[in-house]
Image (cartoon, rainbow, N blue to C red; front, side, top):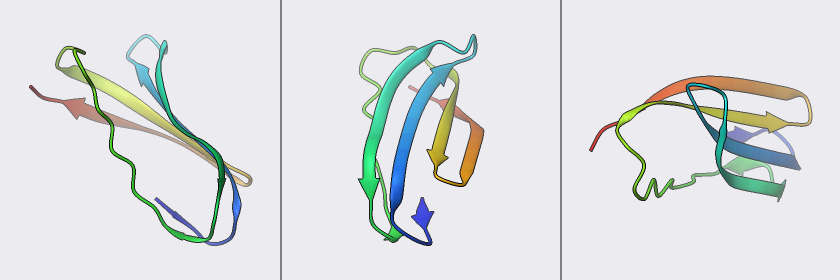
Length: 67
């Protein structure tokens, strides 16, 4: 993800029922491009969602975990 300016960021993983699976980022990040790896552990293959929240931005996107 990229940030145009420094802000508090929260990046979460949710399952298809909206249950919280993991929080990958929860803190202040500087402006620029950032990357995060999700170590899914023993979670089964399937559809998951990530929610990215920053000061003036809220995004929810679908992703597919394949094993």
